[in-house]
Length: 273
Image 1 (cartoon, rainbow, N blue to C red):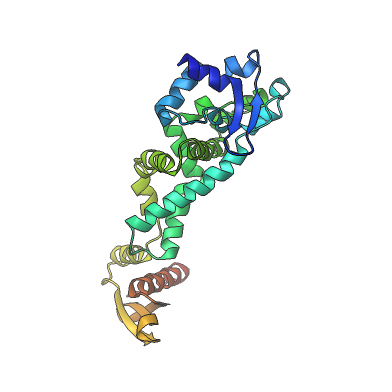
Image 2: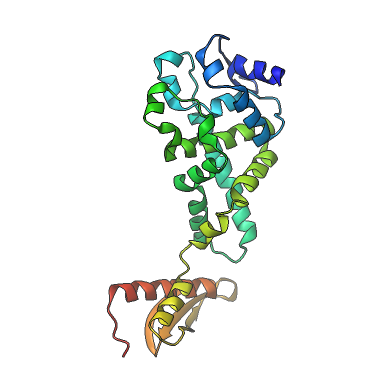
C-alpha cells in the first residue's frame, strides 16, 4: 500500500507510449494531503482492482477542471477533460456492442435510443453516485463551495474519465468488465431500457383505457425485389385507419404505424362512440 501511495502522489499524470508525459507533484503539495488520502487509494484499488502499469492516470481521472484554475493548485495542469473525451468513446463502443448482442431484433433507431438513455449525463451521474465517485473528486476550493462535487455534470464527466483511465491502464477487457459491473448490471438498467418509446405498447394501453378492441395490423403494400423488399403496414381500430408505416421489416413498419397512430390520437379528440 505504501509503495502504491508513493507512486500515485509523485506524479499527476503519466501517459505510456513514445511521447511519455510526467507532471511532477512536490511532496509538500496540498493535494497530497487533501486529495489523495489513503482512503482514496483504497477506494480505487477496490473499485478497479490491481492496477496495470499506469497508476498516476487515476489522479488525472479524479481531477476536476476547477483544480487547474485554482491559485492554490495552479501547478496541476492536467484535468480529467481529455480522459472524459476518451472514456466517452470507449463507453459508447462497449454499450453499443452490448445492446447489439442483447437485442438482435432491434432496429438501429431503437438501439441508438436505448444507448442514449444509458449514457446520457443524468444516467452517468446516477451510476457515479452508486460508487460514491463524488467523494473522491479533486476539485478547487471555490468549486467545492458551490457544491460542484455533487453536480450532475462533474459526476458524469468523472465517470467517463475513470473509464478512460481504466482503458489506458488495463485495456478494453477491463474497461468492459467495469462497465458491465457498474452499468449493465446496475439495478436501474432494465428500467432505462424499458423507457424506450414502444409505440405498439402505448397504442395497446390507449385502446384498453378507452375500452376499445385491440389494434389490428395489416400489410397494405409490398415493394422491391425479394432481398430488398419493403412493407407498408397499416394499423386500425374499429375499422378506422389510424396510421401506417413503411420499412424493410414488418416489425419496424408496425412500430412506425403505431407511432403515427399515437401522434394522431394525441393531437385529435376522436369520438369512439
